Length: 144
Image (cartoon, rainbow, N blue to C red; front, top):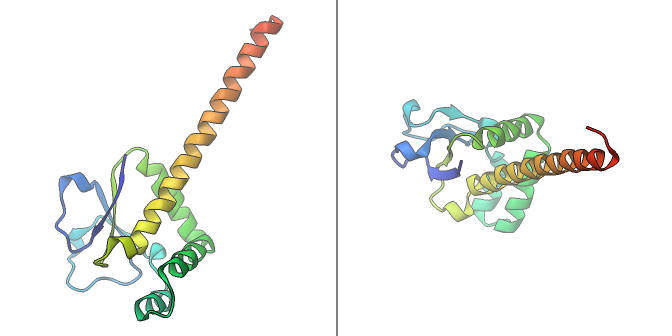
């Protein structure tokens, strides 16, 4: 299923699936009904977002440091693992207040989740191929 991104201020739609707020702080003027879950651990550290918004660091530097922040946090890692598992079965929409989706951590999060899904798919494929090739080898030797 897809992992989507959207502004938390955008109206919900049935295509959103599970709406997940991925901000460290609660957004102004948003009712609790606007989302299903709140994953604070996936929000940007205040100092990092301040540096990006003030122009002190580039977007590439922000992305690198944000991914390092998430990688260093066991709770965030567990949250990403869970979301990747769920995204294989249901549509997830990551929500943040940023106007520019291309320069928002929710887009980076989507990419991290999609990488996890791809790795899991590749591991499953390798295990399946190994299992199948093992059966073929046994048949050649007269086993099974």
